[in-house]
Image (tube, rainbow, N blue to C red):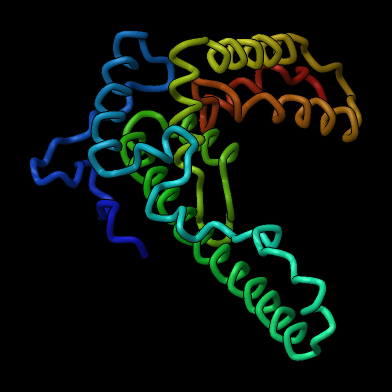
Length: 233
């Protein structure tokens, strides 16, 4: 693993030796000023930890040397050499070795890059533990690299959060889902409804629930379902 990037042990502090704590994420529906303050501190801390290139969607300089080398860079064999079996064999051997080394370098580069991306993601997720569970889970779902290995694209997560600050796309999307869910819950189910009808209605509701900013779970979820039910089943 590259030693040019700072390590991260899971605490919500940067690794510059000053102990500058990352602000807790301002919640599911933050005010613009709160989100600006959070993202400014987040950006400063992550750049200080050496993650600037990944935040910009670029390859870290420490990993550029692992970029595959193109076979097109090899000069062609002179016409006379093509008649020499040993020279042709040596060229083929070199090309095979280069292809193998490219595959190993790419594997190493991908592994290290995913590790750096996941450390950024973990750093952000820690700041969202207190009051931004749903937003955190949406970001996880949208930017997972490998669920089994618990790898996430922290650079993409960061850019998504910055985009949200510039354009209220995610906030508007959440409000749309909330509006659609309210419309579904406002229609009371008819008596003697079939199991299929109930299942279809619940399935339609479930499509919107994960996108809400305001939690709808536990007792609150049960209360809304009861309101929707007919007096006589």
